[in-house]
Length: 187
Image 1 (cartoon, rainbow, N blue to C red):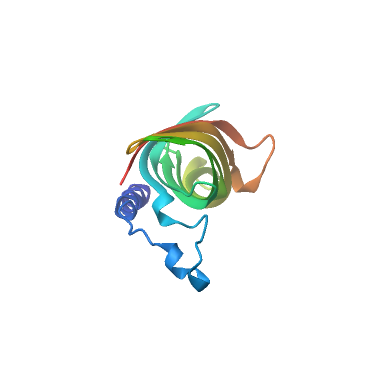
Image 2 (cartoon, one colour):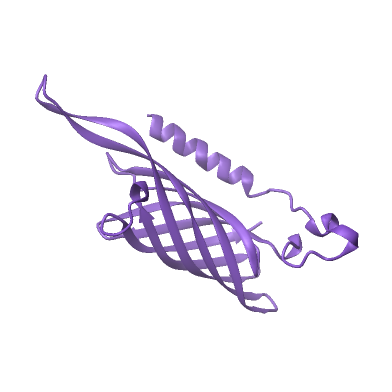
């Protein structure tokens, strides 16, 4: 029940953040100079439906991307696999976006994102008193890395790439690797 409540709470938070007010950072530049990479008019923000595929499982979720062409931005994801004892993750990442193409209504971007992830997951524990396995909900801190390509056309975004999930920041054999694909709309 607690997982369902937290999932609904995170979805509501995602929806309300999609309509965030754009700030014109150029007004903060000293001596009336132009801040090159901080121009809010170039910022691309989108609300996305995302599919994650890992070896041995899938996750589904929502994400908000805040991409600043040739600059730093941010993003967060809410993802889960909805199995009985599956995972529910809240990823918060910093990204850097390389603008590869920007012509008319079409844009192509290489996005490099990395950051921490908060995971809720059930863990099995053997109860020696009654001889049964009991499931206890645990909170874990993980890491994610997500390099991807994003294509924008007018208000729509299609994004896909490699997704590296390091449970409890354990890299190597314990990490889950796969890909993600997102379809989004810019508000």
